[in-house]
Structures are given as C-alpha cells and as structure tokens.
Image 1 (cartoon, rainbow, N blue to C red):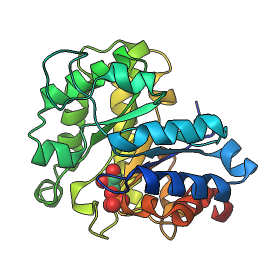
Image 2 (image 1 turned 90 degrees about the vertical axis):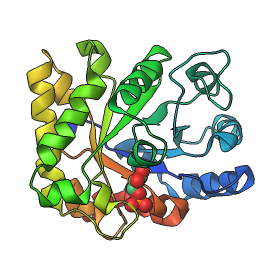
Image 3 (image 1 turned 180 degrees about the vertical axis):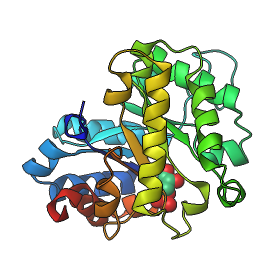
Length: 261
Ligand SMILES: O=C[C@H](O)COP(=O)(O)O
C-alpha cells in the first residue's frame, strides 16, 4: 500500500497551554482558516489539556467543524480509587478520537516506563481511542548511533501483546527528544530513516496490511517553514506539532503543507 493511501494527520499537542476559553478561540480560528480542500486532503486534530476537552467537543460538534480532538494522556485504569487520573471511559464519552501515549515528557518527568506506556496503549484501544504512541531517542543515544535500535525497542515494548487488528489502529509518532521544543529539527532524511525503520519493524511483527496502513508521524520543532520537505518522506504521514500548534494560523499553514509539495 502506497503512502497516498494513508491520510496525512497533523496533530497539535498543546501540552499545558491554553485554558478552556482560549481553546475555543483557537479552535474557531483554526477551523475558519482551513478550507474544504484542506480538510479533505489532511486530517487536523488538536490535543488540548483535559480541562478544555468538553469545550472543544461542544464547539466541534455544535458547529460541525472539521477538526478532530483528543487528550494528552490516559489512565491505565478504567475507574476506582486513582486520584487525579483520567479514564478512557471519560475520554470516549467526550468524543475524543485520539490520545497521546508515551510522550517523552511523561516518560522523563512522570516516570512512565515502557510497561506503563504499553498499558496505556491497551487502555486507549479498550475504549476505541486511537493511541498516538510516541517513541524516540535522546541526544546521547543519537550521538552513539543507537537511535534506531533504541526507538524500535520502545516500539516493541509498547505494542507487546497486541493483535494485528489492534496494532493497525495505532498511530506512531517518532519524536527525537533532542528536537522537541529546541528549534533543532531533525532533517527530512532523519525523519524518513526512522519512519521507514518503524514500518519495517511493523512488517516483521504483523501479517497483513498493518505496516502499510499505520500512520507514522514526525514530531520535534515542526513549523510551516519546515514541514513540506519532512512530509516528502515516503514513510512520513504527518506530524505531532507542539509549540507551533498554539497559533491557529501557523498550524493551519502546517496542515496546508501540500500546497508547497
Ligand atoms: O508533542 C509534540 C512534540 O513534543 C513536539 O513539540 P515542539 O513542536 O514544540 O518541538
């Protein structure tokens, strides 16, 4: 299956930015900036803080906006005595399509191990949410030339025990940690190298169309000025965008990357 059969996804991870009122303004501006052609060619989604999701849902559903949405994290549990945790049951009820799992910030600052990440992938799938599974190496690993091995080990751990049908529903985001929020963007060749390695690993793990259908995103200092060459990679199907997704016009320009392709 060729790249052209996979619908590009531009997902904006707002991280801990924008309150629920600001979220409404940003989503309205984003939807206003996107044309019908943009929406047909590229899927655009925002991943706001939990406290914004209800507002985004009301706006998107009420005005039938062509913008998807999801959450930035999910509990491994479905209910019970887990203070501060957010269940996939609640996210599904709020109409979320996506949930970010295994972001490097959570791995590093919240102690999320490969086992926790795998449990979160399973929690997402249990509630029909699409996990955007983040994998990627830090600077020292890259400098040692072990970036492919490291990233594929994270991938193997996160997908452990999934059936082909489950794996086919996952979106994978390759995010080299050294390129996140630093302005240091991986080259288009770096992004393509890892996206191809991820797809080859899926091919070896699963029969059928899994490797050909799974979307592999790149994340790390993506902007409208660098997205088009990154998207030229045969195995790169979109981007997980942090800082640049907070500006609706800039994010809309990223969604419109194809106009410069
Ligand atoms: O989830 C998004 C990534 O961490 C990239 O963030 P950034 O675009 O601000 O570098």
